[in-house]
Image (tube, rainbow, N blue to C red):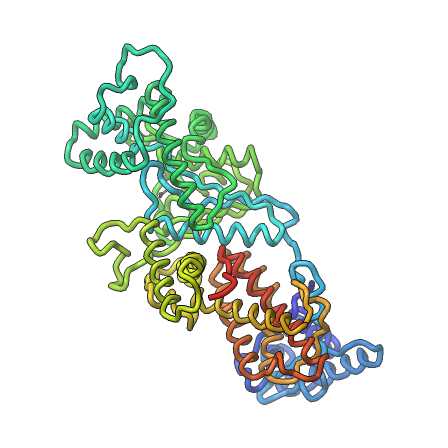
Length: 604
Ligand code: ARG
């Protein structure tokens, strides 16, 4: 469906052109003075210079033309976009507009009838890779991994909804030094294991030599040891090197680490309602690396520098000097960038995506600039294929410092989720209208919404403060407020049905009439922005735009609800129209929270 703002802009363009002015002056924006008008066009001011006329004269010409267009439409039996009294030229040359309520109601009707409420599937099945999650195998998920997972999941859902084929890849850190550290720590703990017996020639056991909780203890111990004990660190490096070169006993241990850890990661991401199409990792890039290194050299891009192999990536337009990308260290080891380049080769082979989106901490910005530039310079990725890095800011505690446990340690994601669920549970139990069991279930849904919305409602690149009390509040720009609004609409609709009213899930059989009151019209205007918001939100990879939109939509609904007796309305046609409108509001809110990775409970 055409975007509502575009329909208005088209009308304005026709009027400018009809008066002999350039169409490009006909830009229409939402009014920043809703008390005066709904939309405005400031193009007459800019046009005045070009045409050497007074802005107000141009505005008046255009307004006259708009009115003429509208009467031509009316005569042809069409609904005019504006009524005469609602288009005005004001000093010094603004054009203020209010939309014809009938025209708006018809647009609402169109939305309820259309699939996906009139959102166009602009993706046409084109493939986009979204790289998010980025957990490191054998390390428990901690709050640092929350943002990538939550933002990535939302972007994946938005893209799919718009008809793209989104391929979400968790891109595990499964090939680095942590593997050697675990292997050597395991040797110290259980030297009798066959993996450490060099004379052993039999099959390796299928049972893992550790449980997940042991594994989670092994890694931090080993990592601490390596910092204090140079010899241990060297052993870990050697073990990593052997693993990366296919040494069978270590490959066997590595597989155990992967299996045990992956099961745990899947459970954790599942609890977050975060999903991946691919569970690939750095190790999958390995087979591509020898060819990559050779190719970069053959193309004359990679050269030796202090024993390492590097590729220059600086460009004359850079505002600061960017260091070359190291693709091989002097000891022959591959690096993070090497594995990302190898992964790109694999993704090009498997998917040839039209776009890449990576979501990590913003401290990795230089890394991605380097990787993207090498990938383009070497021709692995087409010049026109956008490669986007969304670098997010830090999640801070109330003290403004990176979020920590009370003891100052790294907070595990599981703990964070459990804490917020508990806080919501307490709040629900304060009013104690539901059973304990239902309260627990509801708290899980609302807690997750509080957590995700608290994150997503901030522009990704900004740091934000994780504030449980604020996030779980039922008022203000929070997840629970949005859910509460949906639940409120559901409850009105349930009452309507209990009293014999009938309405389908879509509500598309209820004819929506022109708004009678201001808050009703405001609600419709807010609904009319829906397809534009989602398309732009995705184009800008900005879930916070969806949050902003549904916050305003929830507010618009709540004012309408405050002003209107919905169920006791006596005029049946008007009541039907209200039911249609609030059903549509519910659908819009539900679609949007779905895109954020959130769902609503039945009751709260
Ligand atoms: N494992 C990495 C980390 O913990 C994140 C991976 C992000 N994705 C990528 N393709 N580099 O920092």
